Length: 199
Figure 1 (tube, rainbow, N blue to C red):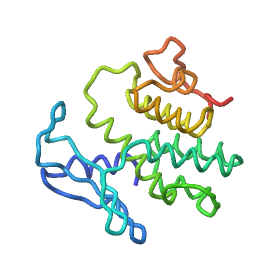
Figure 2 (tube, rainbow, N blue to C red; figure 1 turned 45 degrees about the horizontal axis):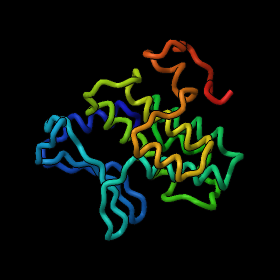
Figure 3 (cartoon, rainbow, N blue to C red; figure 1 turned 135 degrees about the horizontal axis):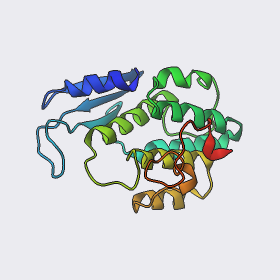
Figure 4 (cartoon, one colour; figure 1 turned 90 degrees about the vertical axis):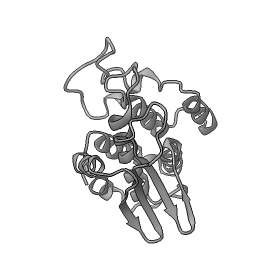
């Protein structure tokens, strides 16, 4: 589904309601509107993302997507630009399952989940931030912080340990992955070329 269609599902979600977004064999991604009030979250807008793998059920975080993409690029550097395209297009609102068609039959030696799962999770993390984020951000749009890290993990510029530590500390991605796309940056430009941060 496109981002706008998933947004509509989330907006209609009632408190305590669960909705399956994607199934693949024994893996399920679902969202839940929690009944508990969390600090800094609107109970009527907050939703949680769950990943169920067989008997395991947990709430994945952004690092799952980032680490998976970094592992994929390490095993298939020839697909770096296609991964940039896929995950940028998901960020811009396209259907994740349509986007991954260009690499669906490619083999990766290392990954955490099937590419379908990673693509859907990335879309949900983007929506979660857009729908719930209510703090002041150095980025406009604020979700560019997440997308900048997605680009940096795909570009594979550091060891994965250092990249993960930087994300966990809340450090921003390198400016060259976001500056021309953030309206708060003096280098902001309109009508950017595809992969402008990699040219």
